[in-house]
Image 1: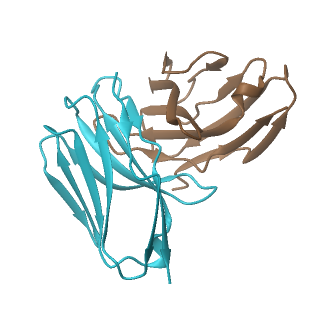
Image 2: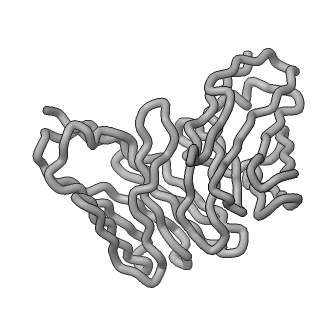
Image 3: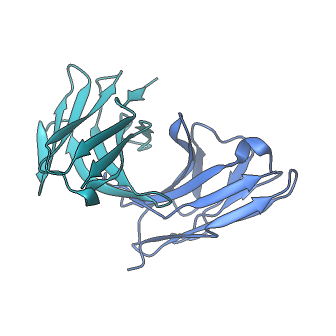
Amino acid sequence: NAGVTQTPKFQVLKTGQSMTLQCAQDMNHEYMSWYRQDPGMGLRLIHYSVGAGITDQGEVPNGYNVSRSTTEDFPLRLLSAAPSQTSVYFCASRRDGSYEQYFGPGTRLTVT
Amino acid sequence: KQEVTQIPAALSVPEGENLVLNCSFTDSAIYNLQWFRQDPGKGLTSLLLIQSSQREQTSGRLNASLDKSSGRSTLYIAASQPGDSATYLCAVRTNTNAGKSTFGDGTTLTVKP
């Protein structure tokens, strides 16, 4: 198993640009989530999904969209990038009923 | 709202020393607590998970304890090694349906040879 994969590893955007961060898992996990990690703020939940076709907002959803058309993929879209979205983004997954989360390697995003 | 605090933010110890990392949380009605390790520029690796009904979990040189009533968890690392150098984060889950976790900022551990 590849586990949880994320692409790209690094990205630089200009303010106002849009992009999609990709996340995929091959463990057939029902639950997937997106976090951002910022110094002094820990990891904060952006959006999550409990299964294909079902998504919900986390703690800091503004400026981000998600969709879950398949069990494997959970892309995160930045609609109009802002410098405040400079962060490291992590995707995680777990099996429904299990409480151990598996994390991807992260995407380091800089918005100038 | 659940808040998770990890003190100290950084810790430096000589190789071979036993050490304790602390995690405190404000809402004691937790479902579980998970300790992670994060290496620089990498994702999070799960170390130990303690369910709310458990008092401790052990894996090799690691032992995690949980005291819900006082809102504390500790991660004990025995006979530390330079390879243990990393940032250690704890995450607390209080909502079983949505599975949302609240993370601490982490403690960055440096083990000197």
